[in-house]
Image (tube, rainbow, N blue to C red; front, side, top):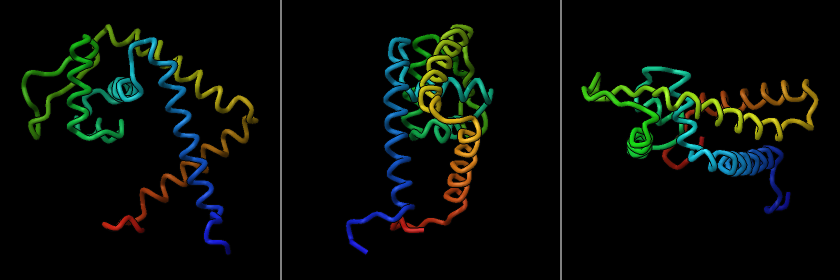
Length: 154
């Protein structure tokens, strides 16, 4: 085998990364006119999906560090989109909730993001979309269950 040739599994990884990058770019293009970034949208959506979620879990769902999440939440609070409790809760984390102002914006943003996802899958038959969803979930689950080491190898 040529050292430069990728295995089929490596090709899948490259295609996933390329698709993820383009998905993020297109979402950003659609969210920017609404005054939102992709992480801000993801944060608002996670707060809607899981009221009372901890800051640590919120950061994990949005794929940012806890420190970045705190900055992100401060910005959203400054815009009146979230409210943060003045009193720290368990583990000194402050509860965060959506405001009524965030609800309408989030509905509009969700429609924009759904449009991007639709563009991504419109050319695929419904059965293929369902199969792709199942396959990607299986890949995610395999990686989630795989032990990792400090050198990055499983």
